[in-house]
Image (cartoon, rainbow, N blue to C red):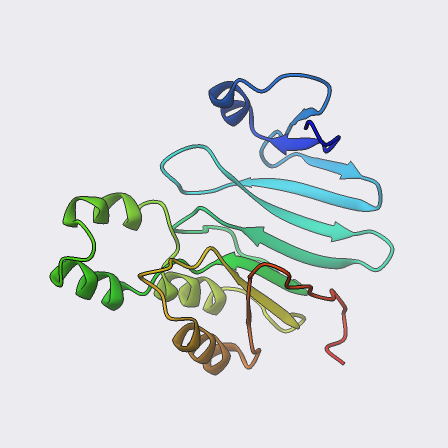
Length: 180
């Protein structure tokens, strides 16, 4: 906000963080709003605090992308998505091994399971949706200790036929309806 950037978020987040001013924009869940050439719908997500995923459509081309992070489950089904940017935080077997080896405290496991998307849940989400128009999958919010980017890429590619990218600093993704 200090940099002149508007913040779009839910009312609970605004209240919890004490946000105020003309740069704060309330997103009402399931109500479409427009920013320039973009139509956006905030979708309530499953998390331990309020959160929103965003379905974003670029009006000039009709390109649709889903952005979803800080969730462990998405109940929505989508058609004609061109891109998906989704959290893929951990691999359950890796988490369990890290707990068994004493690298991760057992007490943190329940919150992790109810706040972040596992590789298996991401795969279930992808299976449940129509990916026939999808050309891009971006995996977000990988855990530094409970994930394996190589394994995640391999398993998502085997499932979808799309080679996902891992979000990292400096990554630029061209959003195009055509993959070449």
